[in-house]
Length: 254
Image (cartoon, rainbow, N blue to C red; front, side):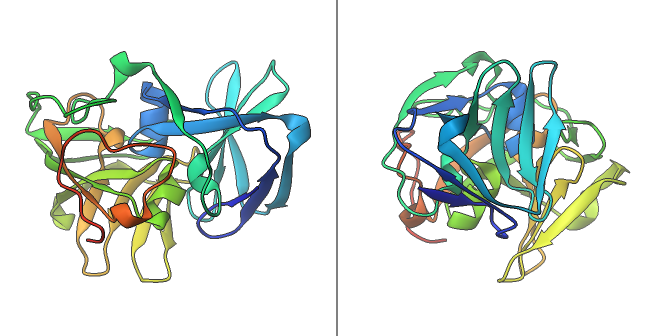
């Protein structure tokens, strides 16, 4: 089974059987992916890198590293130090995975704008200015709050970069104020849309559409967003390993 990042600078193969998918809602995974991160896993002897020009590793803790693509910012791998295995994003797999989500973990650290399963909670209070940052803290910015309506996108591009699916809220581009941006990187997709991510840790930060509209990854916000997941777009391209069980409107395309 073959997988790759969005830009193709990282490609790999995994040999079944594959572990069922585990969805992680810890603060690290949410900050890194921009929403929350899902992963399957295989022993290292059933994992092969086919292309690794863009592969970078970020030392996320004393016990594990996170692998991402420096070309497009795709959140790809999680590798523990003391185990001969590697976790990989099912969203990176090219084509159907045949997998299913078996468990949600660290749900107490979920974002305030969604629930791991079922309808999202009522909106939480949030400050008039939201602070956001990547996982390593090298890229920081603020945007107006509260977030309000958060939109989920399940297109292949959003799944490839996030490792699950994209969840973001729109802000006026002029209202984004950087505190630090020395490690900010951008990837321009074939359709002209641009994604902003941290070159040091790979964290997904924002998406700028071809019309100039700016969408902030909800997982990048530090603390409450004051937002609420409102609808799902491009569900015709959603991953096969997760259900949509929150009762929100779903659109096959935009």
